[in-house]
Image (cartoon, rainbow, N blue to C red; front, side, top):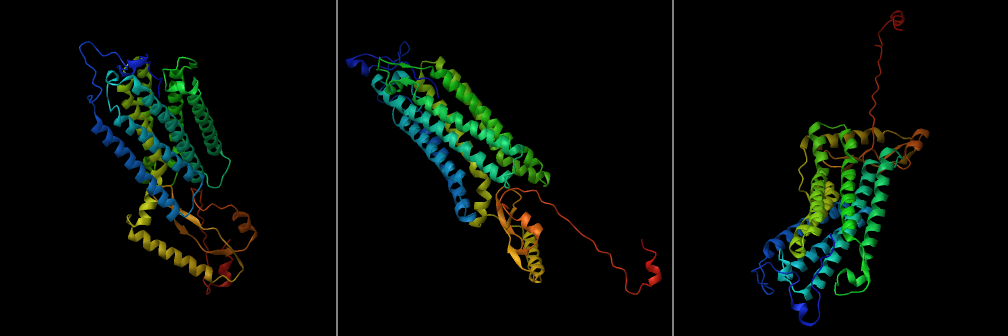
Length: 401
């Protein structure tokens, strides 16, 4: 996002004049200017296809595998819809005037349409990133703090969440109220009213956006690396979130582009670069939200191979549980099934555990609010009983303390 350019405004036939004075010896070409439309269409189609596949896989995992949807799932879908809206604005710019077209090849009369599309894209970007970041933070609260323990992670995550919500709401309001009257945002022929300093607004927004990217990326790393897993598996889990590193890099390039735009008069030619970094950043944020659910979706589709040895172990474990609990005649209560977390993802896949447990005071205290999914701290206990041989004499018994 950046400030809108100043264009040549006149009356009558001035609307057919070039929106920027061409260099000496250059004749404006309004009908078929040099462009990179093919590259633009290909890039936009690729981004949109990757984002669509990611959302479809996550939706399948949540609806058909986990069979449970939460607020973050709806926020993610809203973010994807806004991402698609942003991509649609790029398609409209490619259609007319074109991708990487110099501004002197654009008529003054075409500028309000282009600036209005730019205004829509600014709103779509702001709202999409806000929805997706809120969805990511809510998802991580469920995954990394399923018991809703009010620990340091809980408070830090909530703080970042509500700061992001407040920032993107305020930024959206500022984008829409930057000019009075409102139409002056895209129609520079309006001579009355005034506009605020959009350069500083958009630059501050890009800085805050980068900071929030870094904070969200680093938030779960301590928990991930404290999990009891091999280094290879731990690295594999962490790499799922490493997409966020690339997102931060893209955000840095976007800051550089935002800083450069006010220094150039050829706004239309530089606009595709800004659109590229903006769409790439949104796509990466969308992938950070969707990728952790991919293995669950692949497992549900039968595309993920299971280790036969692990499968045999699971069957024998479940059979041993069944035999042990069927011998218990005490009255039982229904136990909430806990979830086994797969080695490569943070989304639970397999339900493990007995169907009922004996009713005791201790189980009543442990049973409430047991989460159905997420990462929880578990403890393993073992007991040993030593038996004295029946034929041992009574005298020898005194030798044992």
